[in-house]
Image 1 (cartoon, rainbow, N blue to C red):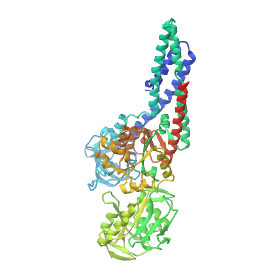
Image 2 (image 1 turned 90 degrees about the vertical axis):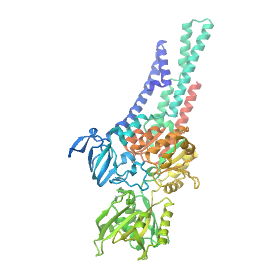
Image 3 (image 1 turned 45 degrees about the vertical axis):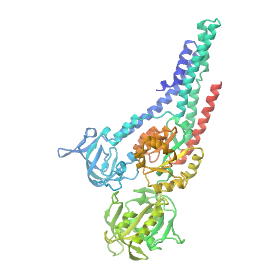
Image 4 (image 1 turned 135 degrees about the horizontal axis):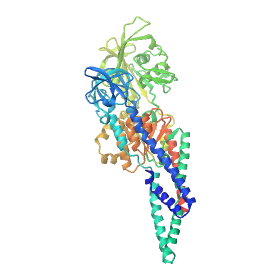
Length: 635
């Protein structure tokens, strides 16, 4: 493909003419320049093709299939729609499967959706508030290429190979061509201009010489020699070396650049489309506020999964152990009704539960997890939106009790009373409205709200209180966003969170100003055609309730408006958008192999501040190359 580059074609012609005219030194120097440039380009193109190889690695070779009432091992490629497949812990799903049996089935879909929390699968599909276009919500479907982390299940094959969701990504990646960088476009244009002027010089000098009476062959040789001399054969190699040095400097900033032209393109970026979780924020849920059912409120210090920090009521009183029984009861429920662990600051399980474990450690109440023995567990599901355990204290003779945690509206609906100053009070409509207002107040601050209840029976629960959780912004991200925006680069946030949470985070990070935070949901994007989206997308700062499939539509719309777009991503589903973007940026820590191979750049630390540093480096390289080209052409 490099031999279609106008500048390379011109240099090849120059080398051939130099050989014919006996100027072997020029021919050798031009040939070396061509060899270096073509070799570097070949390596880049070879690497980009590896993204398709990484996709194929996610498909298992064999699977367990039930045919003729017998379970047997067959090649995954031999599956057809209608086959019944069994799934067990550790299996990679061989096709798109509709489940009709699921026992504690959890599937790691991070390679597909980028979500780090395992998806809990079931045989039923809720239709309440469900966006059937969102892959994350299809709880009765196991997708090809994902990994069974826990439990077992059976299902009917509904899609194989290219007819699966996975195959759609594979096909789109093959069909989607990586756009040319601004440098490549400029070099192509320069090559065409030089070709035109070279031919013009040859014709002009040849005609003048012939008119003046010189021999045609002699004038042709002179004209060709002058034209060859005018071609800056050193330009491609100098540009390549400059970009290579830029790649080295970027590596010191914890950014891996896979394609040399990407370095220069960074200096031309006009829009950055960025994931919220893990890039703008730390992806470490942290409990920051507690509100008990008696009105007691406490603030929590410290962030992340380290237990440094503590609790303090709004009156300034420290919360340690059972010093404030109502607050302590909330923390105790969150610690016991919990299936995750945090060891030395490392989470093993779900982020929300990890935050509650750390909260218990900060309040010196983590020991209750050992004191209470669980006899029954009702796991969280997207349909119920709550989790419950039946447990008893091993150190007292108190009866067994149910501990419940979940979405505030669901938990309140399950309660008939609430706790106030150690006494049980009837939960009337006024109290419910007051507790809902507490939840709205925390949600409007960008907090995820979890409510807690207890009772001797699930039909007669007592509301205890709620906790507000926050995924804290990364250090330095606000300053980086301000710096990038001050240079004229727009930053747009893409998240699966609700509008209130997304808006609060965006305002904290200076992505939008209060009252000027135009946002679009994933549902809005689905309903908009290209023209409508292009009309409004320039004013949009937030895309909420969005999925990876929406990223491609966003990228194309921005590019159609003439923007140079950088896009971040970490899942297999992000790969197409990463490839389509002018600069695809994959996450080094949470990113899948497929997303890394499809991307042009990898952030080792998954940090937005690295993008800012890369853009600054790119602008410097862009200016250096532009100045060198001007110098070459002027001489």
